[in-house]
Image (cartoon, rainbow, N blue to C red):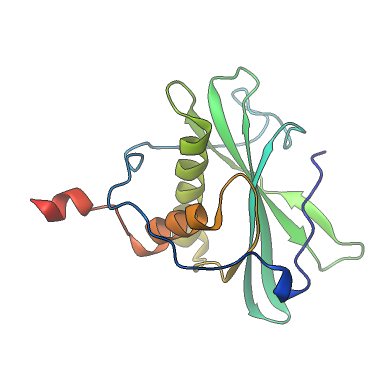
Length: 172
């Protein structure tokens, strides 16, 4: 099992949440990930130990109603696809434990860098969460990983606010 990131218990320890400039055009918005169930089509059953930690974000609606999510990026067993994993903290039972969401986002690996795959897949997953789980924009970033705070803000802006999606149409 992949070692999990620690949960943010002191808000003063969270990474700086600053404003970051983002490019007007995103070159990766036209890539279309798909959803798969772990254990099928070369996707491992659980998060591989070699998966790259992308970030941890948190939704904190009330003190008793929150959600903490870790995101990881790996490859499938055939090394032809990028796979985004989402893991949620279950703090309703003692001891607290992490469980992996039972679906993953995948993207063909050919010609797609790790950085691009991370951004495309996380943005698509945020869009999916908004559409099918009616989940609003996360409230803060608990920790950075492979993706910086600026990267996460860009992915969230595209997913929840539509930033950058129609930039080319507006120029014409």
